[in-house]
Image (spheres, rainbow, N blue to C red):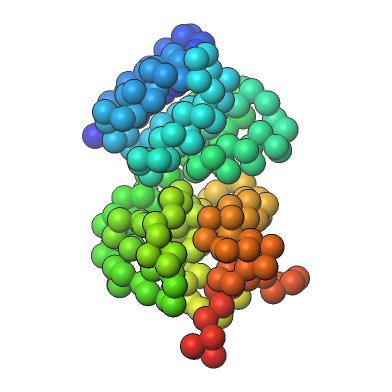
Length: 232
């Protein structure tokens, strides 16, 4: 049985979503402010968190960012604003997806099922190589941890997935569209700018000089690749 956390300060919205999700035989917890949501996320590993951006006490973006410090549980942001910057900001803070209000509950459930399918498939598939060493960079695939010169760097689940794909296929150039399809899935509704955001965030975390990257590089007009001179 999937465990879902629904977070919104509008009680009627929470009630409606909860009623619909219960029809799927899912276990549903609710929270009406950011602090309550964070406390519940610390106590329970949810299969999906539906998280409104505009919340009392602590914004949804702050909640998302803090959850990412201890868990990779899937997070779908709910936003009443349609501007691209809000969507991209949510993804920068570690969200897996976003849905703009007003929404169709059937679309919400479809997005949740798609994310949970991908996560369950990922969990069920054994990693071909649990520890990947490449020069100063080390990836622990089992625990989704990244180390640069033996110093751990905190990355989100999607940032790890992007980096792992590039590192395990050194010097292979992936277009933004291909990365979006491989990492987020072919049914993901976002666009290629999502990839640019994650690459930029990765560089800020793992590169000594993000403007002159050593690891994740750009082939202009084509895409991104992980440079490993040893395999050339």
